[in-house]
Image (cartoon, rainbow, N blue to C red):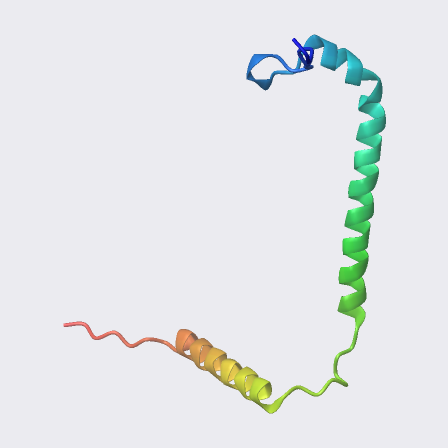
Length: 94
């Protein structure tokens, strides 16, 4: 054979071998701490972004007329639906 058979840390069915478990054991805690740090950073950036956008005042931005018309139509439809659901329904009994 020209090329030697490659060794693998995985057994049949891609199960982790005991050798792989021993090789990765010293790094488990450090990897868990690093992963937790990355997750904490991502969550904090997301939370900061949401809080920063929530505090912004968009009243100085002019909306196009067709968007204002759509919002007014949606508000009117919601008001009609609320009025219809709150009005007492008359039932006729025979």
